[in-house]
Length: 171
Image (cartoon, rainbow, N blue to C red):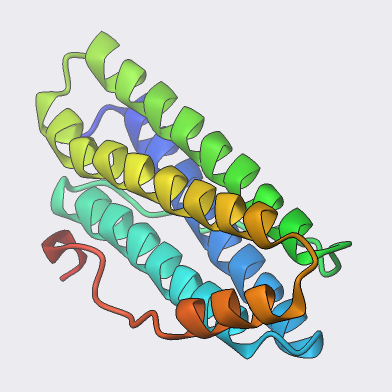
């Protein structure tokens, strides 16, 4: 059984993951609107992954006899000044998510909740990968700067990304 403070923290993280999904769907829409369909597709995959993250937490709370309490999702930005800006915003967001997961893990450490720590380890590893992937995209965008052909190639590469379920914990 989950302690009340951990259940509340997990519910807050579910909300944060759903907000992240909504943010990435907004970023996908923006990329499509400015003629970057590959980048739009990349953000659509991010959207689905964030939904999976919320579902993992949702399933975990239920499995531990907790109560999932869904809250309204705050609005998200809908405009970015450049391709570089949208990915820099993505990196900052992923860093914030990493901090939230770290705080959640610290809480479970304080409460000696080893089962939740075990589940959260997957999220910790996932965040390292998320930040690394976005940093690589930023580095590539900076390398090509405003070169249209370079941006076209990055868009094509990002458009080849496919969706696969985030984790066996999703089910």
